[in-house]
Every structure is written in C-alpha cells, then in structure tokens.
Image (cartoon, rainbow, N blue to C red; front, side, top):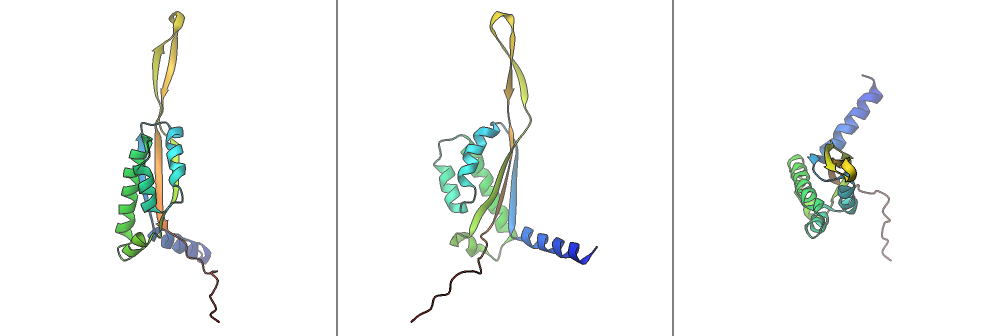
Length: 144
C-alpha cells in the first residue's frame, strides 16, 4: 500500500472512531413521510433532536426517536472517555439518510370491473452521530 493511501485509510479510521451509525431497514412508512421528519433533526444537537421527535405529531417520529437513541448508545460505547461531550451538547446528528425500501404490491377493486394497483412503500433509514468540529479560526480576545 502506498503512503498516500495508507494516510487516507488512517484518517478514515480516526473519523470512524468518533462517529456512530445506526440503521433501520424496511420501515413500513413511505420515504417521503419519513424525510419530512428527518429533515427537521438533520444537523441538530442530539438532546434537542430527541425533544423535537418526542413532541412531534408525525407517526414516523416515534421510529426515528428509537433509532436516534440507538445511535447515541453506539456513540457512547465507542467514546467511553468522552461522556462529557454528550452532556455539553457537542454531539450532533451529522447526517440522516432515508432511502426507498421494498414495495408491497397489492390490488384494489376499481370501477367497471377493473383493478387498481396499490403500492405499499417502505424505507431504510441511516443515522450518523458524531461530535462537532472544533474550529481553530476563533478570534482571540484581547484585554485592554
């Protein structure tokens, strides 16, 4: 393996140490309905995201709340030394992806002896939780 490739692999390993992933497959909700809820919590601090999901009226928020709790538990297992980061609010929902799952195809009766197709959609959800990036470009206070 070349040095550039090895350095990139080590960098990716270091990034994966501080992030946690949780997946939920074949959720019996259409991807469009799930994305409405997912867009609300993308990039939000995890404790605030849990509050948002808890008080949301959408049915998809119940499943996303459970999945987010799983991702937080995965993050805690990976970062046992950094428990204070979670309390300080430095852990955020880095990304949340909702993709289409399988479709159940059913038939419903239609007028004049015809049949209409019903597509019962499902989706796959992936949540990535990680810590906030620390910016080095913060202005320095000068006391006079």
